[in-house]
Image 1 (spheres, rainbow, N blue to C red):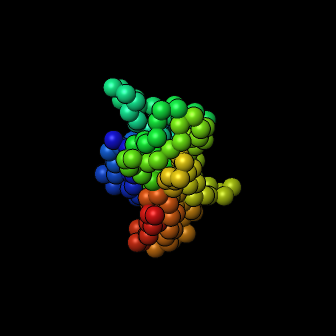
Image 2 (image 1 turned 90 degrees about the horizontal axis):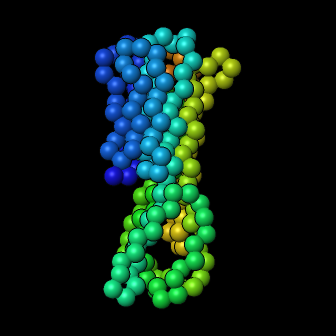
Length: 212
């Protein structure tokens, strides 16, 4: 599985916190305490988990997003070849290959109070390529985790990086929202991305980001 969203956290001492989605999403920090979010799994595009909090006076970090991945599959006479790219590189297409199947997963968004959004996910078959040509494979990094209730300056997480192959681009996951506790109705909006990041608030409604 790929591209699991980061789990959303509970605030104020609740007994349940969100689990990361299947596909490498990081779990929220453990409930009934002040606990940092868990990072998304490397090379899955999973979003980072949100930080769980009981006391609004303690600064906590959300989990980082997981990096993306690019997988290509093509057929040469009598043989199917699968090539996996876990980091950015350049790849020379074999001379007798003209069509490839692909999976392009972007980096997951970093969590803060809200969970980070999953990295964008694109897959397809029969993409035309030129044998013997070099292609840049870009594997998006996971977004950094942000902080909540930090006297020196709280922050959202950051969006995950885009992943690309040829004409195919998957957008990084949106950041999880974070901020300082102001009142029980204060809320912060998650970032837009391949999948939107989670919003954050103490007890008021909050808005997640949009996917694209």
